[in-house]
Amino acid sequence: MYIGKLSELTGLSVKAIRFYEEKGLIPTPERVGKYRVYSQVDVDLLLLIKEAKLLGVSIKQLQQVIKITGQQVNWVEINTFLVELKAAFIKQITELQQKIQRIEHCIVSLDECPQLTPWQPQVE
Image 1 (tube, one colour):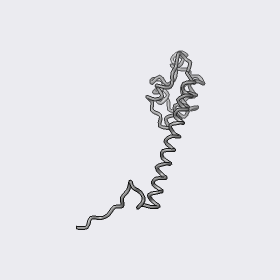
Image 2 (cartoon, rainbow, N blue to C red):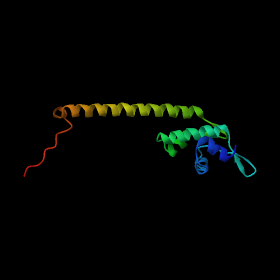
Image 3 (cartoon, one colour):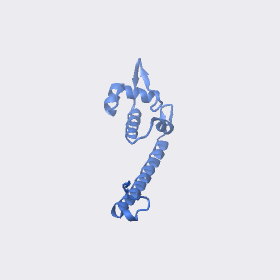
Image 4 (cartoon, one colour):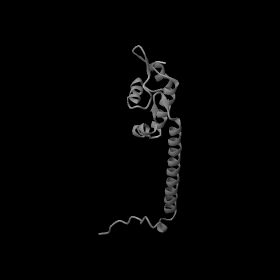
């Protein structure tokens, strides 16, 4: 498929697709004449990249994870990264829930919250 169809299938601009290609995040496409021809692997990778970007994954992180040899993609390494990313998000959620519990405790009983002391205006 040509880049226009790839753009349509992924929802990414032609400029974004070329950028990801330049960064080595998708395999260098075969050419038919002067046109790049993309495959389903490119669609899959670009959808993964798009989703990863929405989750806050940087281009640099993606470059470290997406390993391409010829036209082959190391999906096992990508899967491992996704499992680790999920674990990191779960850890962040747990930490945030603990912080919320501490805040709730302080809201209910400010006097018993050792980390916070009520603000008292200075009397001159």
